[in-house]
Length: 111
Length: 115
Image (cartoon, chains in turn cyan, yellow):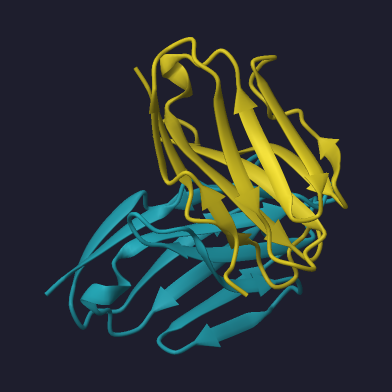
């Protein structure tokens, strides 16, 4: 994988459902993996920064895991709420240290 | 701290005009980044500065684009002459380091429309 890829591109879930999405990145060149939450008409807001293989981070109902050996990270949302509706971006930094962003997963939580 | 401050929030200009976007990073952040967000390409890095010095401008689309950082609290991104394909949201972000150990802090963006 040469670029940062996110899937799915968009997702609709019902309020109360749990959901997860994937970020894939180059495993051969890794320094850090970021997750951002981006609400419409606002700016991206940092959720997590992970650097170690096996890292797990949690903030409220949102958590993330990291596998640097195989080059993926999962973002989980437990018991989705309408206010969780946003685009979730992941970004990877490698040896060059600067971030490359994926195209995001657009989540819509239906009440 | 008020966060990263960008101005203007919206800019509508005619093709051929000069456009200047402004950014004030968070005090103490040594890195400043300019990103452009479009439907086709997502968030793409245009240029970044470290301690006011441009480090990598390989993302700048063409010579019509230029960026400066005259001091630690101010940066500009200029497009001259502007073209309709430059229409996008331009974000400025700052961080303590290039990797953003605490994540990057983004400004609210400038939505540029070139007609």
